[in-house]
Each structure stands twice: as structure tokens, then as C-alpha cells.
Length: 128
Image 1 (cartoon, rainbow, N blue to C red):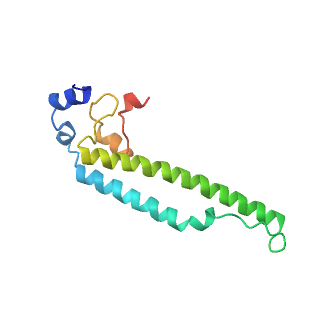
Image 2: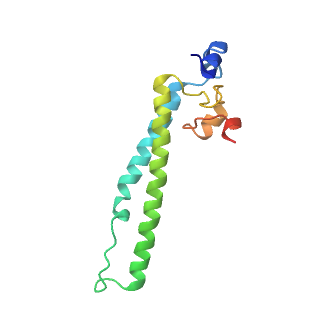
């Protein structure tokens, strides 16, 4: 069974490459971002650890501040995790030869959009 994506590829083979889209450039960008996110996660691991509630060592306001810092660090880690999933999916699409094509309509994603977010999976029209 042919999908719309197959039709687009047959109709405009290497459409992304004809626009000067260098797949290895996008792979390098994605890998660099993944590395940076993983390093950031490792350096902020202490901020996400449970806060000690020992009233003898710190005051109430200090504990509240520590709890707030911990909550922000956890939220930041959740955002990093979501972004890492998007990057992994984009790298999988690169390996499968589907990178640069919209996962919804099958048409190519313009370089301009990829330069804003290399992990994007949809063209502007389908993302709306």
C-alpha cells in the first residue's frame, strides 16, 4: 500500500536535497543538542534531589526556597526529557531516510523551518 509520503518521494525524489539540505549537517546539529541536553541534565542532578526538612540545620524560608529551586529543576528536567525524545525521533527519521519530510502530509519541510528546529516533524501548515 502506498502512502502519501511514498507519492511525494516518487514525485520529487530527493526534494530536500535539491534545496541544499545536507542531512549530515542536520545530524550533527541534533547530536550536538542531544549532548548539550544530557550534560545539562547531569550538572543539575543535585538540584532535583529531595530537600532535607531538618529544622535544626535550616530555617523555614530557606527550606521554602530550596523546595522552589527543586520544583523548578524538576520542571526543567521534564522539558529536557521531552526535547530529547523529539531529537531521538528526528535521528530515527534520519536513519530511516524520512527526515525532512512532514510526517502528516508527506511534503518536504523547508530548510528555513528546520533551521529553527532541527527536530521538527511537521511542515508549518500541518503544525497549525
